Image (cartoon, rainbow, N blue to C red; front, side, top):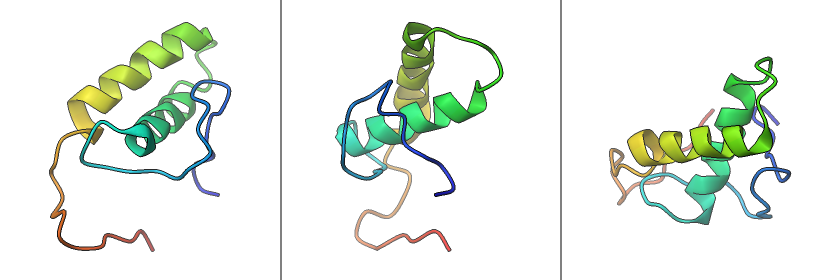
Length: 73
């Protein structure tokens, strides 16, 4: 997996999502925050706060064409 989930930060067994504020996008935001700040020694609470910012400012925005499938090669 290129970007492993962070179930220690957000306990969700599904996949990743984009373009809304549901569980899939939250899962993605926590995985991204965990990877970006991997070497910062942040607490789980701090990582969760940063994941929320990533979700609100980037991931939950409907910037992709939601009528099409989007695959990452």
